[in-house]
Length: 165
Image 1 (cartoon, helix red, strand yellow):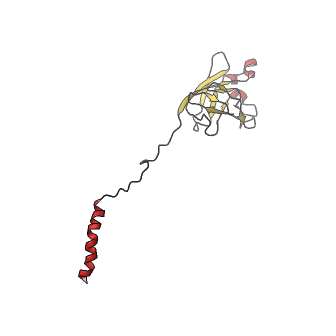
Image 2 (tube, helix red, strand yellow):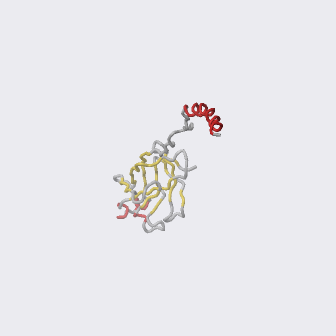
Image 3 (tube, one colour):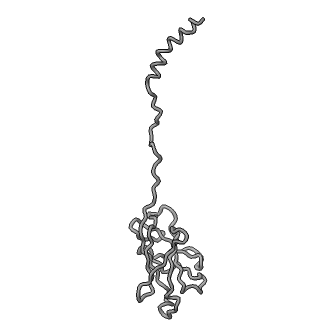
């Protein structure tokens, strides 16, 4: 019996040796690494804010106190003070590291300022009015007009602002 059982094995040995001699390629076609995550381009954006006419007609000490800029792209505690143009009530600053979101890919950014002159208003010092971001005077706002108000803006690759459509 042993002679009979070894005969089929001898016939299969050359076949088995030939199949094992070639190296099977287990690599599938396609990318070898995961695609790189695309990070948004970062730009610098000029921000301007004009204080209300009350500072022009009846200046008060609060008209000279710093105006602070806030934006939804900023991390907590990274808001910054705007600098007042000498002899005017226009405050300016540069927001650095702003992720580009124009053409619109997601929701627009929300921006606002804290102006001590407006502390006694229902907005408790916050305003989304009279803000220019990247050369664009912002006209579309959200919120009730009090503390929750914010202006909406998209920012392009050149650091220019765009009002939402």
